[in-house]
Image 1 (cartoon, rainbow, N blue to C red):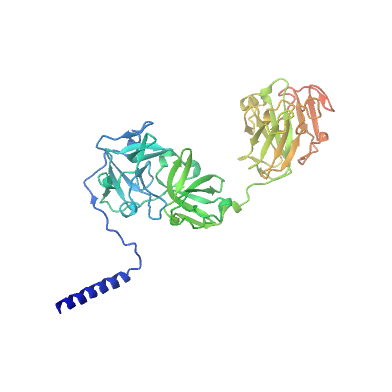
Image 2: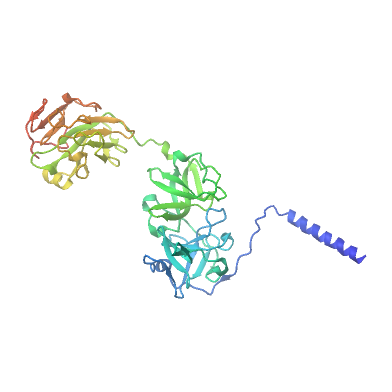
Length: 456
């Protein structure tokens, strides 16, 4: 009888346990926090620790303690075996990557929490531009920083008893990035996914994948995603906005790693829909100069016959040396604006140009560029969409002895020309040289007397 009563009691207990478990809607139970410490204090900064590294792996022998705030999380699976810390909750100056062999490290080292690290016995190294602290492993006989075994992580990493602070990502621009920001939490504004990658997933299955972020100034940044992340199969977001993540580096290329998709807030209209590249037939080559007495005073002049200014973003000037059919050199005109009814003078020797003509050129470029022709080359002015808008000379024909030779002289566009012409038309030009062939004028020109750059 007692036996039957005990059986019934056990059944009742099991039933009660089952009902209790049935009330739990999520299997991700909150794990109790690990023991914290208030006895340890840092005696070395992250920056000072990194300064110890000089081109080769070192094992730390001193009883140093560093502190930092956790900025990464493996909760969504985009980080694995690493923990990134920075030296301050706000406006950090240094970051560091820790290599630890612990799964679900977010349960023990929460984002924003402060941790202290006993560095004695740990290894400090650098891989592809990223400082790493951890254990050691050997690859083909070469030692490198590896994951600290789980069994001894607790001997080196300690959670502080300080309450969670207000971790804030540092707002930066792509042009502002520097190595001191690696392993810190950063945020970019006005970002979006490259148009050609829309419709793709964050990553290929079980394969680390690089996607491309781009801002409204067409500057790009790599977005690194794990093929094992929970959001691997999700489609990349289509809008524009802010993105937060941990900055890392792969040799020369900076990369951003998000903790989860909540780090992305692309809720605005894509900036690529804004038109910022323009074409025009009112921009043309107005003068080419090869002074007989001074090669340093050479220049190319463009003219805008429209009353409105034009942003030259995406415009290029190409040079075909002698009879070449392939481009010899180019000038990128992006970043400049040519005002209405105004000239734009380009010089390969800015100091000599100013010394000769008395004012600086609009743009200074290198020697052997399209602005440094010796009079027998051919030039094209090309708009942002690859269309040849204007031309001087005949591509594939050496200018010597032709109707487009301006050696030791100048080629000046006639005053009645107000539009570009993609076909070379000799009647639009007055050309001076040292031969006088093919309708040109045999009258070498000297600088500055025979030239008037900047005046149309």
